[in-house]
Length: 97
Image (cartoon, rainbow, N blue to C red; front, side):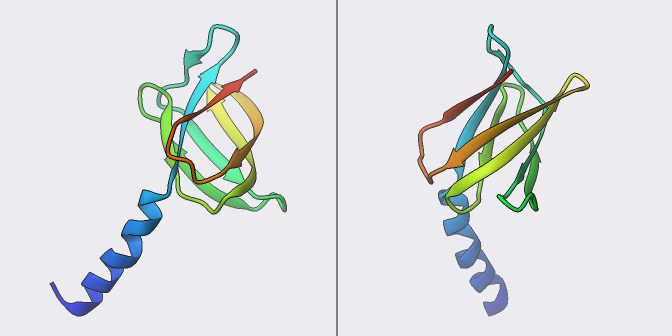
């Protein structure tokens, strides 16, 4: 491992440690939105994050604290929600309606 690789690892690790854990659910029964594409955009509607939930609808978002527009596609249907990331370590549940 060279010095450049070591610096990269040290810079990357703190970001991962401060990721907001989300759990995405759908509808009144709050079914897990497993394997769902999730996109977050900032207040200017610029995309800032895109990823997939695991089978239980969980995903970690490593973005600065603030308000974001969340878009998720579940079984061909598109959902939107407004969320606030705070840097918390306990999971935040986002229920899509």
